[in-house]
Length: 138
Image 1 (cartoon, rainbow, N blue to C red):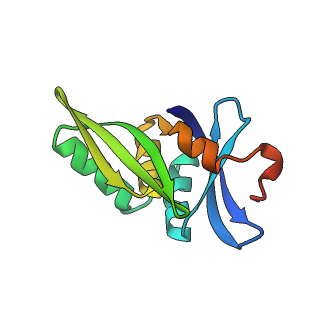
Image 2: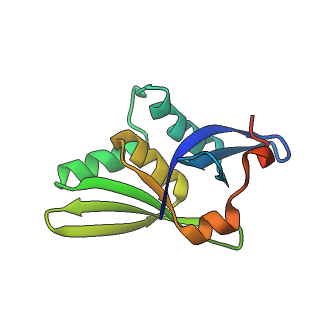
């Protein structure tokens, strides 16, 4: 697994669709994941230090996990099939590790709220990764 951060959220100029751009820690490879506007907002808010007046879905997930005594450990982008990215949210409760299948946008939004690390599988990085010169995200 390769640790990444959210480099930016923007608009893909070629598709006019929201995209989150995950960059490895050296900023040599990026993984663009196309998402809907609502998911882009959910990811952007914690990056900007903004708390919505009412909880969004990611806030709800964090609250439920905490109320059940679980800790958000990390988000993992695990694979890409037919241009669809798959992810897991990893929680821990006591000695138990809990792996929850979810959309990448949800995993990223939850991880950002808890300042948990985000990882991309090496195969995904190799298959979907692009160089900085290839990004068309504004």
